[in-house]
Length: 352
Image 1 (tube, rainbow, N blue to C red):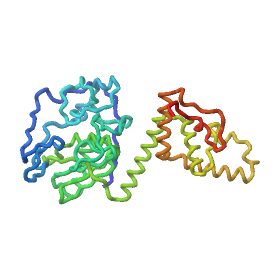
Image 2: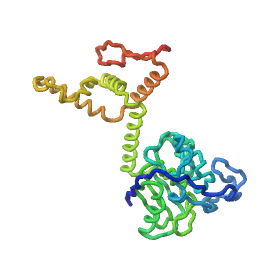
Image 3: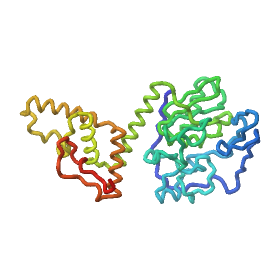
């Protein structure tokens, strides 16, 4: 079931974040011993008879109320970008004195660090066997698996997921497997999925069940895989551009190197690109050769609009680091080499 639950534009926080609980109010749940060895990684006992950990889960003692609990904290004054994990779970006793953000993730703060989640926890190379935990930095996952749902009937289960999970971000798609007591919620942004996973873990919908919220495995459908690939490419292209601070000279030089390696016509000079087509007064008198060259240049420009290759991105990052750390070690020679490398031919390092 495809759905779009667009979130209203976030208002500026004008009230301090309230204390959700008092210190010492919550009772620390005791983990039932179902085996002989306690596994600190999975937070359960192992080595005994098999027992599904979801059957021994206790219902969460608190739940986040976004409208009442959201407010400004010390993190807003200091420019922090990390969200409070206990706020998401509805049990932060600090309120406005907290060093982390007490509000929903906003678009401008999405995935500021791909190696960590919005709560500042480090991701891992692969998922846990049970698909719980923080997640993996090798894949951007926006879909949650919702287990141990009550049987709501056709249509009502989807509405329940939209109602409860839609509070924490824009939902693109929901699906309920009727008769199997589980469903899936796909968010538009991964940061909202991370937040909702913690906010709805061990919570209930409207029938008092205790939900088992985990990361969903990869959707085997080809269109879903292609959609995730395109999204990752778009986000990667945008982040590379911001990371380089629009260093057009460096990007232009890298594209010249790519054109030389692939046997393609070099891109036009930066002055011509900046001037635009309206300043070219000799286009009508150039003849067929210029027309062919222009079409080849246009083709090259269309290819350069996309994301750069991995080798080029690595080269750009390396050169940017050299510029930042050794300003005198990276220079551009005024001579133009015959191969059209332009400014790249002059880059070097004192350590070479």
